[in-house]
Length: 64
Image (cartoon, rainbow, N blue to C red; front, side, top):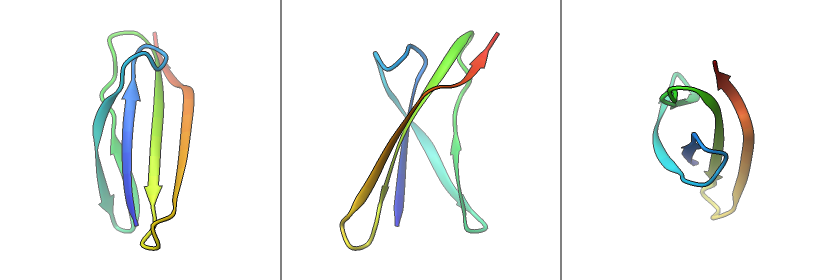
């Protein structure tokens, strides 16, 4: 399986690919914090069979 993650600091208008690491069997995305506002995350897990799953989380977390 592989995992790719993108982040958007502006509600999905622009996207930036972020680094993903597998640490002890757990996938971890290294998401930089924007100066302020909310972060939107988009991930795609691709399986060895060729299938995949996409998910987008709007306003995943906010920075005040």
